[in-house]
Image (cartoon, rainbow, N blue to C red; front, side, top):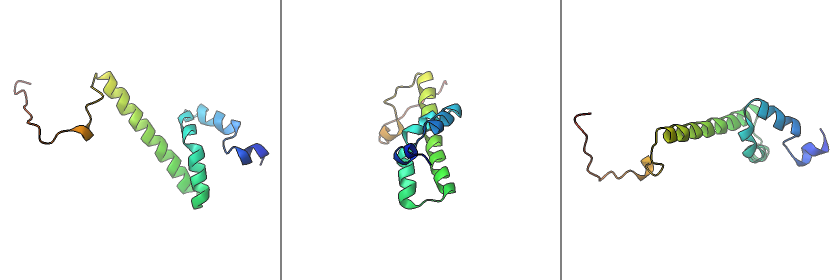
Length: 94
């Protein structure tokens, strides 16, 4: 283990590999997840599950945002802001 690995958990080789696998965005959260895994003594499989779940969540959010933008949806229209007391009318001809 080199000294750079001790100070920086993300070696240049790891960065290159993640980018080659199209996982470069994982670099944003990986140092934090490595620290968490060390503190909680996570088994390797749980750590891997955690970082891959982060990536799946990130990709789902990105994909949804891209689809919404492509569909021309108003970004302010979100389920969280839905007014359940609003009177909703449907166009019967559609």
